[in-house]
Image 1 (cartoon, rainbow over the protein chains, first blue to last red):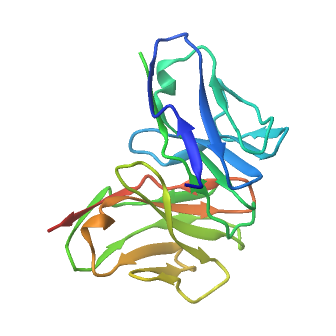
Image 2 (image 1 turned 135 degrees about the horizontal axis):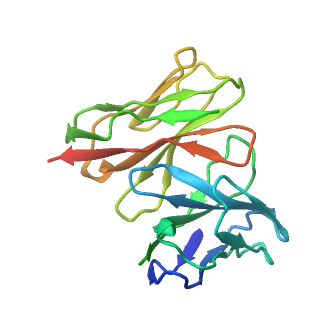
Image 3 (image 1 turned 135 degrees about the vertical axis):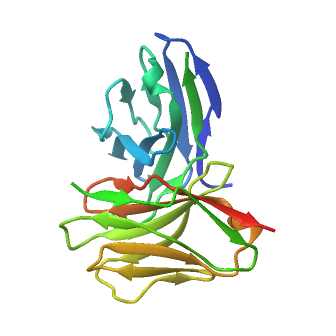
Length: 114
Length: 113
């Protein structure tokens, strides 16, 4: 099925470990986004990309890095995991940045840092 | 700064009845869009309905409709003929010319059989 695929769905990390959350879309969308959703809160933007090779920071980028070498993939890297990064992470994509376009979201990765 | 407020953490509705979820927002901009997203237990966010700020007519998508009051900065979602599959978290979101949404904290909707 076309859409946004995130892996893994669940992960437990120890403090100080690193990991990469994978995100891939097959809709040829140029615009991709990473959000985190903390319990009882809405989504907050971590990083976004407007095309291959172009990324920029969102509201809460500290502790994360991204890369966009292809249109399809937009991985999110956590370096030196901290308990504050325990959250559900969503990747999303859109065809256009125009205001009228909704996003297509992945099903999320639940990350726990212990 | 723009904010989105959903004051109802949880709502319940009987199957086949109508429920309204509230959302207010704060902005000084004139050009923006408002959205309602549904997040079922599968966690995937699904776009339910969108509203352009410059349109006075309320958006409608099948059983879902909005009551958009621009002056009051209110954007409520009405679900008619509620079904068990409507049970989910519902997020109100605001979008401007920047590359981001501003999401509310969500309302959990329970549908009672």
